[in-house]
Amino acid sequence: MRTDRRKEESKPIYKQIVHYIHTEIVTGTYEAGDKLLSVRELATKLEVNPTTIQRAYAELEEAGIIFTVRGTGKYLTEDKRRIEQLENDIAKQLTENFISEMSKLGINKEKIIAWVKKVEEVEVNVSGK
Image (cartoon, rainbow, N blue to C red; front, side, top):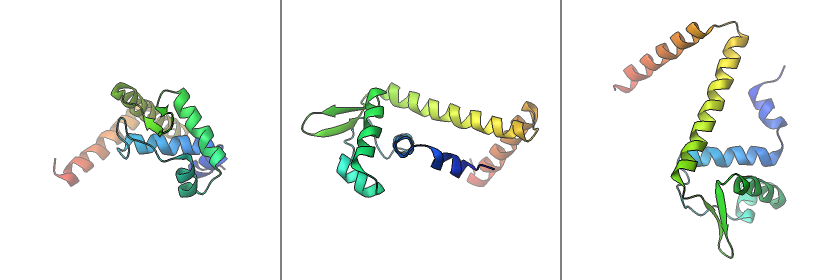
């Protein structure tokens, strides 16, 4: 039986790094136009081969999420719409995964919506908003 952690571990390392960078962007660690760590710096930080980081950066660049300035490094896109789209894509994927897992448990759409509302009410009451 596979768990989410195992599913993540079964992905190629460069894909895990792409996901890690996506998360860093969406959570605000990086903002539009920020310089990313160099290939060597990130490889050292994550304890992986620099070639793996190069592959992850290449995928991010191909997707328009980062760009290279020759001689200075890699930067996060300045296109805030592209960053917002990335956030939407991640939110959509998480939602689809959540619905899929709930459906596997035999929980229908109405119950899923009721659970989400219930959790949201608890969160609102706890935070005082």
